[in-house]
Image 1 (cartoon, one colour):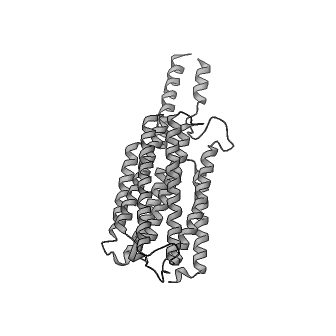
Image 2 (image 1 turned 45 degrees about the vertical axis):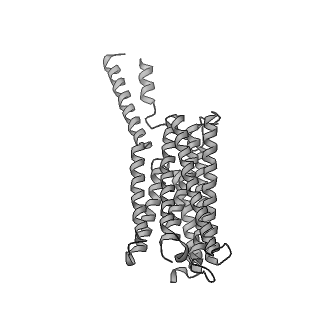
Image 3 (image 1 turned 45 degrees about the horizontal axis):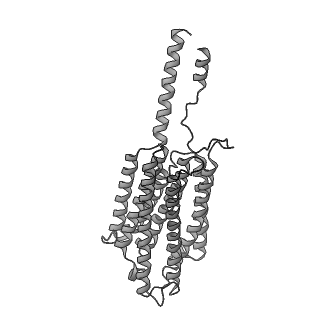
Length: 116
Length: 210
C-alpha cells in the first residue's frame, strides 16, 4: 500500500472514531448532565409547591399545568433516554399516551367536566 | 493493505445499539425495549382512567372531609422531591451499568430502592392520617377515587422497589441473563414512568385547587 493510501486509511479511521465518539456523547449523557437536569426539576417542583403559600391568582392553574408538562417531558426525554433513542420507542409510548388523553377527555366531556 | 482499506471504509459509523442481546431482530432494535415502551404506553391508559375518575369525583365529598381539609401539601412535596431524586439515582445506576461498573450499579440501585421505600412510607403515613381524620375508602366518591388512584400508584412504586432489590441480588450473584446494562435500563424505564405519573398526580390531585 502506498503512503498516501495508508495516511488516507488512518485519516478515515480517525474520522470514523470521531463520529462514533460524537454519536456516543449524544447517546449517553454524562452523570453531571443528569444531576443538572434533576436540579432543574427540583427547582420546578419547588416553584409548584410555592403555589400553596403564594397566591398566584388566576395564573396558578396554568402555571402548574405548564410546569407539570415540562417536568413530564424532561423526565421522558432525558431520564428515559427517549431523546437519544429510536423514534419507534417514542411512537409506541405516544400512541398509548395520545389514546389515553383522547379517550379520557372524551369520557370527561360526556360528564360535562369541562363545562364548569 | 488494500483489504484493510476496504474493511475500514465499510466499517459502521453509527454508535452501537446498546439494546441488543446479540441476536438479530426485525427492527434492529431490542425486542425487550420495544415491549417495555409498549407496556408503558398501555400504563398511560390505566393511570389515565384512574386520574380522570378522580378528577370527576374530587368534588363529591359529601359526608366526609374534602381535599382542603386533609391534604398535607408540605409532606407531599417532600415525598415528591424524594421520588424525583430516586429518578436521578436510577439514571446514575443505568449509566454505571453501561460502563460495566457493578459496584456503583448496585449502590445506586440500592439508594433508589431506599428512596422509593421512603416515598411509600410517606404514603402509608398519609393514608393512616387521612383515615384518622375520617377519610376512609368508602367515605365518599372523592375518597374512593383518591385512595384507588394513589393506592395503585403506591403499589406500582412498591413493585418497583422489589424489582430494584431483586436486581441488586441478581447482579451480586452474577446471574443476570442477557445484557446486564439493558436489564438495568428496563427497570429504569419502569421506575422513571412511576415518577412521571406522580408528577401528574401531584399537580392534578394535590396542588390544583378543587
